[in-house]
Image (cartoon, rainbow, N blue to C red):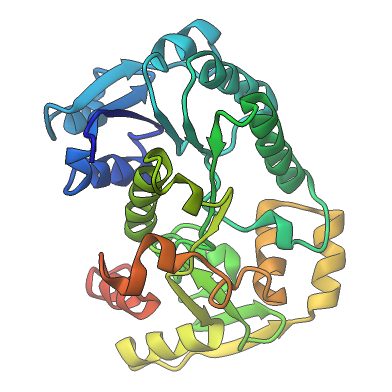
Length: 313
């Protein structure tokens, strides 16, 4: 372990980005990354200052992704750039890529953390844009910039019951009714944000070290747990002693609706129902966490119990 790398994280004042920052500041990564550069529009914000307080390796750096000069200044001397910015326009992505290439950044982990677009049996703007951005990054990098797209399925913290987009995915806890697209027994991958952060830290280390860089593919898929709506209903019934009613919508009709109205929720619900967001049999879990020797993957049932105990439902 050289302990001489600089890692920069954009979006670190958000939930996932903040967890990634904390992961790389803990052993063994605190001995690998000599500097953890937090890129933010406002270095004086409470969230940025809270990260600064975590240790001497943290450096707060102003970063405006729509400003080419700001991007170039922020990426000087950086070895690894991790983005958790969420959706970015193609123009902003080009500005960031220009900075990565100009500053000879070696590893880039873009803000994916969702579905593996290559498994789609349709084309919508969101997926084609993200794949296009990846292609441009690899071409601009010309073999010198390693681009690692990380696919994780849904987040259990925000994709279940009353949390985040859960109600939009058919979880109606108030009426104790869960509505699926397709078969309620179809499984979908959920990966906890904590596990994603640990995985990204691990991938960063593997990808930057010459002895292990070749072991990291361009596309990395994680599967913390794979469960169905039927399974989730069972977990909730066990936690609450209340009976959940399962309903199902025709998947072919939903596909037609999704193609006419390719909103993010319509797309996600089709991917869930068609089984195209189930990565339990095709993933890189062993690469990032061999035999669960580094940590235990968090289960959906554990998250549901935590949410119930905390009063979220």
